[in-house]
View 1: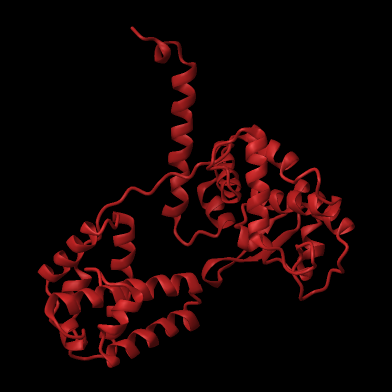
View 2: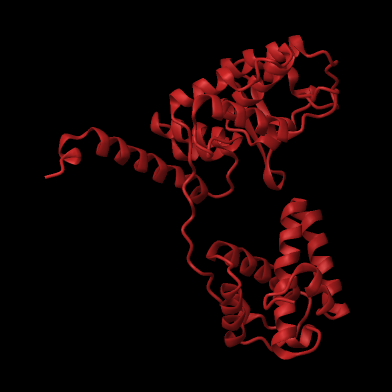
Length: 325
Protein backbone atom coordinates (compact mmCIF):
# COMPACT_ATOMS: atom_id res chain seq x y z
CA UNK A 1 0.00 0.00 0.00
CA UNK A 2 1.31 3.47 -0.80
CA UNK A 3 2.01 6.07 1.84
CA UNK A 4 -1.24 7.93 1.27
CA UNK A 5 -3.25 4.78 0.77
CA UNK A 6 -5.85 3.94 -1.84
CA UNK A 7 -9.60 3.43 -1.71
CA UNK A 8 -9.36 -0.36 -1.57
CA UNK A 9 -6.13 -0.57 0.38
CA UNK A 10 -7.34 2.07 2.86
CA UNK A 11 -10.50 0.02 3.45
CA UNK A 12 -8.42 -2.82 4.85
CA UNK A 13 -6.59 -0.43 7.22
CA UNK A 14 -9.68 1.25 8.69
CA UNK A 15 -11.53 -0.03 11.75
CA UNK A 16 -15.11 -1.22 11.14
CA UNK A 17 -16.56 1.63 13.24
CA UNK A 18 -14.68 4.31 11.35
CA UNK A 19 -15.45 2.66 8.03
CA UNK A 20 -19.16 2.72 8.91
CA UNK A 21 -18.87 6.38 9.91
CA UNK A 22 -17.27 7.21 6.57
CA UNK A 23 -20.02 5.35 4.70
CA UNK A 24 -22.71 7.23 6.67
CA UNK A 25 -21.08 10.59 5.95
CA UNK A 26 -20.87 9.82 2.25
CA UNK A 27 -24.52 8.76 2.21
CA UNK A 28 -25.35 12.04 3.96
CA UNK A 29 -23.54 13.98 1.23
CA UNK A 30 -25.45 12.14 -1.45
CA UNK A 31 -28.86 12.47 0.17
CA UNK A 32 -28.81 15.97 1.64
CA UNK A 33 -26.14 17.82 -0.32
CA UNK A 34 -26.97 16.05 -3.58
CA UNK A 35 -23.28 15.48 -4.29
CA UNK A 36 -22.60 13.65 -7.55
CA UNK A 37 -21.37 10.05 -7.65
CA UNK A 38 -18.05 11.33 -8.99
CA UNK A 39 -17.64 13.68 -6.00
CA UNK A 40 -18.60 10.99 -3.50
CA UNK A 41 -16.15 8.49 -4.98
CA UNK A 42 -13.38 11.11 -4.92
CA UNK A 43 -14.11 11.98 -1.27
CA UNK A 44 -14.20 8.31 -0.33
CA UNK A 45 -10.78 7.73 -1.88
CA UNK A 46 -9.31 10.88 -0.30
CA UNK A 47 -10.48 10.17 3.25
CA UNK A 48 -9.68 6.45 3.02
CA UNK A 49 -6.25 7.38 1.71
CA UNK A 50 -5.56 9.55 4.75
CA UNK A 51 -6.79 6.87 7.14
CA UNK A 52 -4.67 4.31 5.34
CA UNK A 53 -1.68 6.60 5.85
CA UNK A 54 -2.46 6.81 9.57
CA UNK A 55 -2.47 3.02 9.77
CA UNK A 56 0.97 2.86 8.18
CA UNK A 57 2.26 5.81 10.18
CA UNK A 58 1.29 4.41 13.58
CA UNK A 59 0.70 0.72 12.91
CA UNK A 60 -2.58 -1.14 13.13
CA UNK A 61 -5.97 -0.30 11.68
CA UNK A 62 -6.91 3.37 11.87
CA UNK A 63 -9.81 3.95 14.24
CA UNK A 64 -11.37 6.85 16.09
CA UNK A 65 -8.61 6.77 18.73
CA UNK A 66 -5.95 7.24 16.04
CA UNK A 67 -7.97 10.07 14.51
CA UNK A 68 -8.32 11.75 17.92
CA UNK A 69 -4.55 11.58 18.38
CA UNK A 70 -3.67 13.31 15.10
CA UNK A 71 -1.25 16.18 15.60
CA UNK A 72 0.11 18.87 13.33
CA UNK A 73 3.24 16.83 12.69
CA UNK A 74 1.07 13.92 11.47
CA UNK A 75 -0.63 16.21 8.99
CA UNK A 76 2.74 17.44 7.77
CA UNK A 77 3.95 13.87 7.38
CA UNK A 78 0.83 12.94 5.36
CA UNK A 79 1.24 15.89 3.04
CA UNK A 80 4.95 15.18 2.60
CA UNK A 81 4.19 11.54 1.74
CA UNK A 82 1.56 12.65 -0.75
CA UNK A 83 4.02 15.03 -2.36
CA UNK A 84 6.61 12.27 -2.58
CA UNK A 85 4.08 10.16 -4.47
CA UNK A 86 3.63 12.93 -6.99
CA UNK A 87 0.30 14.45 -5.90
CA UNK A 88 0.06 18.06 -6.98
CA UNK A 89 -1.15 20.97 -4.87
CA UNK A 90 -4.63 20.99 -6.32
CA UNK A 91 -5.18 17.28 -5.69
CA UNK A 92 -3.82 17.57 -2.17
CA UNK A 93 -6.02 20.58 -1.42
CA UNK A 94 -9.08 18.61 -2.53
CA UNK A 95 -8.10 15.67 -0.31
CA UNK A 96 -7.63 17.97 2.68
CA UNK A 97 -11.01 19.57 2.03
CA UNK A 98 -12.68 16.14 2.00
CA UNK A 99 -10.91 15.14 5.21
CA UNK A 100 -11.97 18.36 6.96
CA UNK A 101 -15.56 17.85 5.88
CA UNK A 102 -15.60 14.32 7.29
CA UNK A 103 -13.97 15.41 10.56
CA UNK A 104 -16.40 18.32 11.07
CA UNK A 105 -19.29 15.94 10.58
CA UNK A 106 -17.73 13.38 12.95
CA UNK A 107 -17.07 16.04 15.62
CA UNK A 108 -20.80 16.85 15.70
CA UNK A 109 -21.49 13.23 16.61
CA UNK A 110 -18.57 12.42 18.92
CA UNK A 111 -18.39 14.65 21.99
CA UNK A 112 -14.77 13.83 22.77
CA UNK A 113 -13.45 14.19 19.23
CA UNK A 114 -11.46 17.38 18.71
CA UNK A 115 -10.31 17.76 15.07
CA UNK A 116 -8.45 21.05 15.63
CA UNK A 117 -5.14 19.78 14.26
CA UNK A 118 -6.83 18.63 11.07
CA UNK A 119 -9.09 21.66 10.62
CA UNK A 120 -6.24 24.11 11.21
CA UNK A 121 -4.05 22.55 8.53
CA UNK A 122 -3.63 24.97 5.64
CA UNK A 123 -4.12 23.71 2.12
CA UNK A 124 -1.14 24.07 -0.21
CA UNK A 125 -1.35 27.02 -2.55
CA UNK A 126 -2.16 26.16 -6.12
CA UNK A 127 -2.73 28.28 -9.14
CA UNK A 128 -5.96 27.44 -10.84
CA UNK A 129 -5.37 26.93 -14.58
CA UNK A 130 -7.00 29.54 -16.77
CA UNK A 131 -9.86 28.39 -19.00
CA UNK A 132 -8.90 28.23 -22.67
CA UNK A 133 -11.79 29.63 -24.71
CA UNK A 134 -12.04 29.85 -28.48
CA UNK A 135 -11.99 33.24 -30.11
CA UNK A 136 -15.27 34.48 -31.56
CA UNK A 137 -14.45 33.54 -35.16
CA UNK A 138 -13.42 30.02 -34.18
CA UNK A 139 -16.54 29.55 -32.09
CA UNK A 140 -18.73 30.54 -35.04
CA UNK A 141 -16.82 28.20 -37.36
CA UNK A 142 -17.31 25.31 -34.95
CA UNK A 143 -21.06 25.88 -35.04
CA UNK A 144 -20.93 25.53 -38.82
CA UNK A 145 -18.77 22.41 -39.16
CA UNK A 146 -19.19 20.47 -35.93
CA UNK A 147 -21.10 17.58 -37.53
CA UNK A 148 -19.69 15.14 -40.07
CA UNK A 149 -21.00 15.81 -43.59
CA UNK A 150 -21.55 12.06 -43.96
CA UNK A 151 -23.97 11.95 -41.03
CA UNK A 152 -27.71 11.88 -41.50
CA UNK A 153 -29.24 15.38 -41.67
CA UNK A 154 -30.99 14.97 -38.31
CA UNK A 155 -27.72 13.95 -36.64
CA UNK A 156 -25.99 16.98 -38.12
CA UNK A 157 -28.81 19.20 -36.86
CA UNK A 158 -28.58 17.56 -33.42
CA UNK A 159 -24.86 18.22 -33.06
CA UNK A 160 -25.27 21.83 -34.13
CA UNK A 161 -28.14 22.33 -31.65
CA UNK A 162 -26.13 20.91 -28.74
CA UNK A 163 -23.04 22.96 -29.61
CA UNK A 164 -25.14 26.10 -29.95
CA UNK A 165 -26.59 25.57 -26.47
CA UNK A 166 -23.10 25.11 -25.03
CA UNK A 167 -21.82 28.30 -26.60
CA UNK A 168 -25.04 30.34 -26.74
CA UNK A 169 -26.33 29.51 -23.26
CA UNK A 170 -23.15 28.52 -21.41
CA UNK A 171 -24.47 25.07 -20.53
CA UNK A 172 -22.34 22.20 -19.37
CA UNK A 173 -22.63 19.23 -21.73
CA UNK A 174 -24.37 17.23 -18.97
CA UNK A 175 -26.92 20.03 -18.62
CA UNK A 176 -27.62 20.20 -22.34
CA UNK A 177 -28.02 16.43 -22.58
CA UNK A 178 -30.15 16.46 -19.43
CA UNK A 179 -32.91 18.40 -21.21
CA UNK A 180 -36.08 16.40 -21.81
CA UNK A 181 -39.10 16.63 -24.03
CA UNK A 182 -40.68 18.90 -21.42
CA UNK A 183 -38.06 21.52 -22.35
CA UNK A 184 -38.64 21.27 -26.11
CA UNK A 185 -41.11 24.14 -26.50
CA UNK A 186 -38.99 26.47 -24.36
CA UNK A 187 -35.74 25.53 -26.12
CA UNK A 188 -37.30 26.46 -29.47
CA UNK A 189 -38.57 29.86 -28.34
CA UNK A 190 -36.13 32.77 -28.62
CA UNK A 191 -36.23 34.94 -25.52
CA UNK A 192 -37.70 32.21 -23.33
CA UNK A 193 -35.78 30.91 -20.31
CA UNK A 194 -34.72 27.32 -19.82
CA UNK A 195 -34.79 26.02 -16.26
CA UNK A 196 -31.47 24.23 -15.83
CA UNK A 197 -30.63 21.85 -12.99
CA UNK A 198 -26.90 22.27 -12.42
CA UNK A 199 -24.30 20.98 -9.99
CA UNK A 200 -25.50 20.28 -6.48
CA UNK A 201 -29.11 20.38 -7.62
CA UNK A 202 -28.95 24.16 -8.02
CA UNK A 203 -31.52 25.55 -10.46
CA UNK A 204 -31.02 28.56 -12.70
CA UNK A 205 -32.79 30.24 -15.58
CA UNK A 206 -30.89 30.60 -18.84
CA UNK A 207 -32.25 32.71 -21.73
CA UNK A 208 -32.57 31.06 -25.14
CA UNK A 209 -30.90 33.13 -27.84
CA UNK A 210 -32.35 33.09 -31.39
CA UNK A 211 -29.53 30.95 -32.81
CA UNK A 212 -30.08 28.26 -30.17
CA UNK A 213 -33.87 28.34 -30.67
CA UNK A 214 -33.50 27.97 -34.43
CA UNK A 215 -30.94 25.16 -34.16
CA UNK A 216 -33.07 23.21 -31.67
CA UNK A 217 -36.23 23.68 -33.74
CA UNK A 218 -34.45 22.39 -36.84
CA UNK A 219 -33.21 19.33 -34.94
CA UNK A 220 -36.69 18.54 -33.63
CA UNK A 221 -38.15 18.95 -37.11
CA UNK A 222 -35.74 16.36 -38.50
CA UNK A 223 -35.45 13.98 -35.52
CA UNK A 224 -37.09 10.62 -36.39
CA UNK A 225 -38.01 9.88 -32.77
CA UNK A 226 -41.10 11.25 -31.01
CA UNK A 227 -40.59 13.96 -28.41
CA UNK A 228 -42.07 12.74 -25.14
CA UNK A 229 -42.05 14.64 -21.82
CA UNK A 230 -39.95 12.16 -19.88
CA UNK A 231 -37.44 11.19 -22.58
CA UNK A 232 -34.17 12.87 -23.48
CA UNK A 233 -34.51 15.79 -25.84
CA UNK A 234 -31.31 14.85 -27.69
CA UNK A 235 -31.22 11.27 -28.97
CA UNK A 236 -28.58 8.88 -30.15
CA UNK A 237 -28.93 7.16 -33.53
CA UNK A 238 -30.75 4.22 -31.90
CA UNK A 239 -33.22 6.45 -30.10
CA UNK A 240 -31.72 6.37 -26.60
CA UNK A 241 -30.31 9.37 -24.74
CA UNK A 242 -27.38 10.94 -26.57
CA UNK A 243 -24.01 9.84 -25.16
CA UNK A 244 -21.81 12.89 -24.41
CA UNK A 245 -18.94 11.06 -26.07
CA UNK A 246 -20.66 11.59 -29.42
CA UNK A 247 -20.49 15.37 -28.99
CA UNK A 248 -16.87 15.09 -27.89
CA UNK A 249 -16.07 13.15 -31.06
CA UNK A 250 -17.92 15.66 -33.21
CA UNK A 251 -15.93 18.45 -31.56
CA UNK A 252 -12.67 16.57 -32.12
CA UNK A 253 -13.47 16.24 -35.83
CA UNK A 254 -14.35 19.93 -36.10
CA UNK A 255 -11.14 20.83 -34.30
CA UNK A 256 -9.07 18.86 -36.81
CA UNK A 257 -10.87 20.38 -39.80
CA UNK A 258 -10.38 23.90 -38.48
CA UNK A 259 -6.84 23.43 -37.19
CA UNK A 260 -7.82 24.32 -33.61
CA UNK A 261 -5.78 23.32 -30.53
CA UNK A 262 -6.52 20.29 -28.37
CA UNK A 263 -8.12 22.61 -25.81
CA UNK A 264 -11.07 23.11 -28.20
CA UNK A 265 -13.40 20.73 -26.36
CA UNK A 266 -17.16 20.93 -25.75
CA UNK A 267 -16.46 22.55 -22.39
CA UNK A 268 -14.35 25.19 -24.15
CA UNK A 269 -17.60 26.41 -25.74
CA UNK A 270 -18.93 27.16 -22.24
CA UNK A 271 -15.67 28.97 -21.43
CA UNK A 272 -16.05 30.92 -24.67
CA UNK A 273 -19.60 31.94 -23.72
CA UNK A 274 -18.39 33.45 -20.44
CA UNK A 275 -15.26 35.07 -21.86
CA UNK A 276 -17.03 36.68 -24.81
CA UNK A 277 -19.84 37.99 -22.60
CA UNK A 278 -17.30 39.54 -20.25
CA UNK A 279 -15.34 41.08 -23.13
CA UNK A 280 -18.57 42.64 -24.41
CA UNK A 281 -19.14 44.36 -21.07
CA UNK A 282 -21.25 41.71 -19.32
CA UNK A 283 -21.70 42.08 -15.58
CA UNK A 284 -19.71 39.52 -13.60
CA UNK A 285 -22.60 38.77 -11.23
CA UNK A 286 -24.96 38.15 -14.14
CA UNK A 287 -22.43 35.83 -15.78
CA UNK A 288 -22.10 33.99 -12.46
CA UNK A 289 -25.85 33.39 -12.43
CA UNK A 290 -25.91 32.29 -16.06
CA UNK A 291 -23.11 29.79 -15.48
CA UNK A 292 -24.57 28.52 -12.22
CA UNK A 293 -21.41 29.13 -10.20
CA UNK A 294 -21.94 28.95 -6.44
CA UNK A 295 -19.09 31.39 -5.77
CA UNK A 296 -18.21 34.62 -7.55
CA UNK A 297 -14.53 33.69 -7.25
CA UNK A 298 -15.13 30.84 -9.70
CA UNK A 299 -16.49 33.29 -12.27
CA UNK A 300 -13.75 35.86 -11.63
CA UNK A 301 -11.22 33.59 -13.28
CA UNK A 302 -12.64 34.79 -16.60
CA UNK A 303 -11.40 38.30 -15.85
CA UNK A 304 -7.88 36.84 -15.88
CA UNK A 305 -8.60 35.19 -19.23
CA UNK A 306 -9.82 38.48 -20.66
CA UNK A 307 -6.76 40.33 -19.34
CA UNK A 308 -4.44 37.66 -20.72
CA UNK A 309 -6.05 37.90 -24.16
CA UNK A 310 -5.79 41.69 -24.05
CA UNK A 311 -2.07 41.50 -23.32
CA UNK A 312 -1.61 38.96 -26.11
CA UNK A 313 -3.26 41.31 -28.61
CA UNK A 314 -1.19 44.19 -27.26
CA UNK A 315 2.05 42.24 -27.63
CA UNK A 316 1.22 41.34 -31.23
CA UNK A 317 -0.09 44.71 -32.34
CA UNK A 318 1.67 47.48 -30.42
CA UNK A 319 4.73 48.83 -32.30
CA UNK A 320 6.77 49.26 -29.14
CA UNK A 321 5.84 45.79 -27.91
CA UNK A 322 7.04 44.24 -31.17
CA UNK A 323 10.31 46.14 -31.16
CA UNK A 324 13.47 44.14 -30.54
CA UNK A 325 15.49 47.22 -29.55
